[in-house]
Amino acid sequence: MSKRILILPGDGIGPEIVAEAVKVLEYLKKTHALKIRMSHGLVGGAAYDAAGHPLPEETLQLAREADAVLLGAVGGPKWEPLDIAVRPERGLLGLRAELELFANLRPALLFPQLASASTLRPEVVSGLDIMIVRELTGGIYFGQPRGIRTLPDGQREGFNTLVYKESEISRIGRVAFDIAMKRNKKVCSVDKANVLECTELWREIMTGLGREYPEVALSHMYVDNAAMQLVRAPKQFDVIVTTNMFGDILSDCAAMLTGSIGMLPSASLDANSKGMYEPIHGSAPDIAGQGIANPLATILSVAMMLRYSLDAPECAGRIEQAVNQVLDEGLRTADIHTEGTRRVGTAEMGDAVVAALG
Ligand code: IPM
Ligand code: MG
Image 1: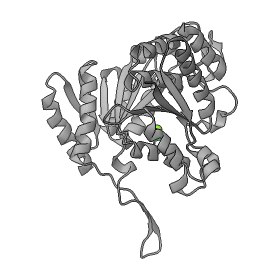
Image 2: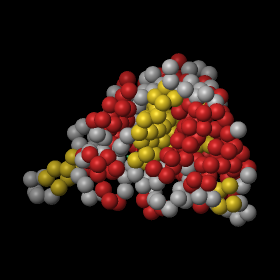
Image 3: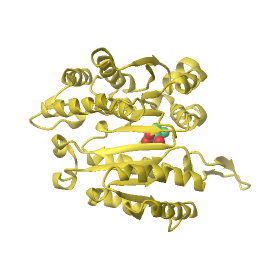
Image 4: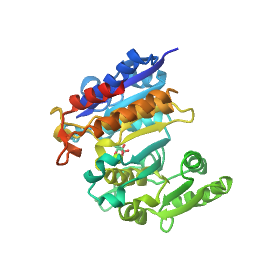
């Protein structure tokens, strides 16, 4: 039985980078007998323009039926004036919530060839290999009540709610501990337990869970310190587990350690390893349509998809190997370009990866 993949290019550079990832999938289908069927759908601003909603029912239905979803990026200045309920980002958040994709895996891995592309000194980042496990369907992103209300004195007040149930904390905790068992057996749980009761509970649950994983060294860190440690001495981390919003912030920070946010893939998984895969960068409207965006994060997201949802680890390894090879060959998109390397566009990079797949 072939596996169903839903392709959602989205907005901005989304269609350009997804096109390169689709080339990779088509190639593996043709030459390595990868049994997949691809369908396409609309999400984000593109869906709003075509159907009046960033997550049309049809897209949601296709996503429910799929074994995995590949998403480009959503959003852009064009849709910023819209009501928050129909902004492109809602399409993404809606997919995460509706498909119950609570576990967001964001690896920050430095390709040795790019050590000099990082803004940090090479000795600080070389060998970097961190896995950020971000809770994705709870916390302040989804907590109720939320909104903007008018107070009796006439001024407005904005409010959101940070809330986590014990079960939500332990299920993301388990994902992190299980991943750590396959890595270097270290988990750092990031919270703000000195100020926020919600994350005091988070710390308590993580501590309890830690007793079930005696081989894993568990540490706790406040989020402000974690942000500092990530740029001071990032190699101290193996697996980081944290809340939805802290994970959003720390994963961008970790991405820059690797030279470019344009290199990092992500997986968002439900309890049964069904997943949505996307680069962690955004839609980059400033460079959209120019053919200069880096497609490697999306291509590496395909590798994660093959490994986590489609049970094709051999093909996943091939993709990662091919990316390594094109970097070895000196090919670089603008975001990772340094002196002495060859600057290429989006499609040329995608073609080079396909050529390197063998
Ligand atoms: C991310 C993005 C999203 C988030 C936005 C686009 C809603 O920043 O995936 O990190 O905040 O989760
Ligand atoms: Mg983000």
